Image (cartoon, rainbow, N blue to C red):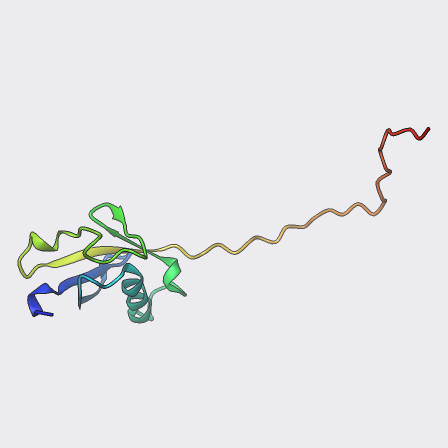
Length: 118
């Protein structure tokens, strides 16, 4: 693939710092981008993704879907010759189900069937 076909992306984090820039093929999927972000995430950050599913990528106001390619996301890479595209990386950790204290009745409930047998 010719060198000019590659897209240069950097990922802006919540505190304004960046990861990258990195060069990607337009055929690279958003899932691949997320995996790279998790691998390259700075170790000194208080908020960090544990998995690629914890990361949402936003470019030009659109949330990018995992199964889409860089080319399908219609990133404005054609508009800036040799420009670096900034993609915002937002961490949204998957929520664990909260433990609930279920109140269990110790007295069994009576059968409330109103059937009569003939």
